[in-house]
Image (cartoon, rainbow, N blue to C red):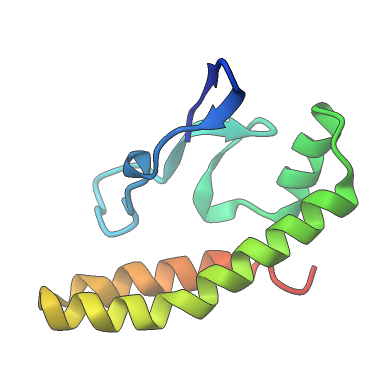
Length: 111
């Protein structure tokens, strides 16, 4: 996810820049931007975020709390979202996307 500078300061790119590419087997599992010189999201861990925090002089404690909070929210929302999408736009792909999201998010809970 890219960021940009505005008059109000830096901001994250819009959420439409996010795409679940895990289901596309021919696409390499690489992120658009590195997190502490790490680019393969399949193997991304909290350590990579902690290394990045150190590089940009953020508190490891703050990053740990935010990772846990965001991961917990994602895990709370993924099943209801999958169910809603499956009902409105039937497809088996949602389960595969959901499983990938759960696997990755679970790495960042209870750090």
